[in-house]
Length: 521
Ligand code: C2O
Ligand code: CU
Ligand code: CU
Image 1 (cartoon, rainbow, N blue to C red):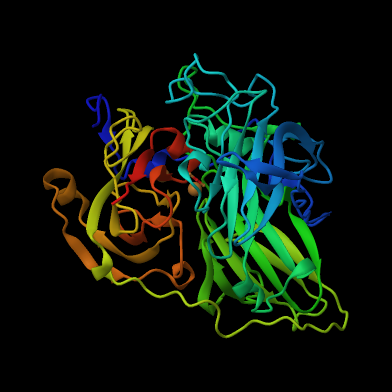
Image 2: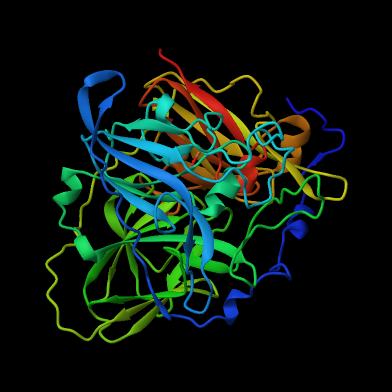
């Protein structure tokens, strides 16, 4: 339970004032750069390195990838010098893993990085102590149903010169997953450096839908960065040399597939966009400037039952959305994808006459709603933020527990539970559970003071159903400020120890992450 709380107090409305508002003075102002001068890059698809025996059964040979983390340089904009990143390939984001349901693969994740980190480590954070190597990595397949020993447990990190081989069974529905670093205490820095990429699982059902594919299916991996005037990655520090951690990173350079303000030439036809928010802390509110709709066909964990027509959507860090955009009535137009008032990228629709034999089916994949009565247990879990006397955010916890406190969440394998996230803070925290997929039941405002002082939940107002774009299977949910957010989770998959955490990476690195264990019943 919370130690040292004498110096800290739970967050109040005051916290909102403390959030960094402006771009630090010593950084490049991204808005001064020319827009739409670089074509949108498509990250390369990871190439097979051959086959390799499964450690547990040496006769079984599986397709095998070797992905090595190394320093690279990437031009993020025509008018900027190359930027140093760390990547599992030649690009940032790292190469896309293309996988199929029913076809397990092995991935060797190699650490070929230098001994020294180039971003500011906070040695007070759990796992980032001075006694540990500066450069440590461990990869996690976000959204993957993966045995615990291949899940990238945050303490399973390894130093340069080492590698691990993970087994991905791919026994789950088609979805856009992503892989990223998960090393305890420096995960925010490693992902910021570029150690992440998209991963797609495909299946027969989805292929039967005749959605736009091939060159008409495009990943859009969105992430923000701060750059120095020399176009190098800038990660801010608190100003206290012994405690450089900052509570959130917001960059003004919003990159799509590694470019600032890119353009994509499209034909007047349907396209499928696999969108991932790979940012440390930024949420995106996306829309097209001319009101052209998105047809949403999927969420984090795959297809929706039916397409939804939206003109805007919110995407929290870690979330994915699967969209079809139909440019057929936009011949010759230039359409800008915006994040509220900020430009993200541009689509340039050609004037060509094209035929489009892809479909946007009326029915996609059934997603049966899980009845609340299925749940054998409801857990009330608080999201806690602690401030120092100056009102600065110092620490974030889940259910007032530290990472190293004993495991308190032990759902039984194949049982269903409701997890209720009580959020007294002023921020939305995107909460992610490893190994499982879930559905959002609802959100409801509550009275924080009665809960804080007497642990009584007084609800204010009705239960709010999830937004249309959040229906379907999820693995990350925005737990909104001063609300109770309820999810229903079938704990299917593998028994063993996993983690759940806030996907704002600064929070995750400062104790807003907990182990949980799926136990054999
Ligand atoms: Cu994106 Cu612990 O994961
Ligand atoms: Cu994950
Ligand atoms: Cu958080």
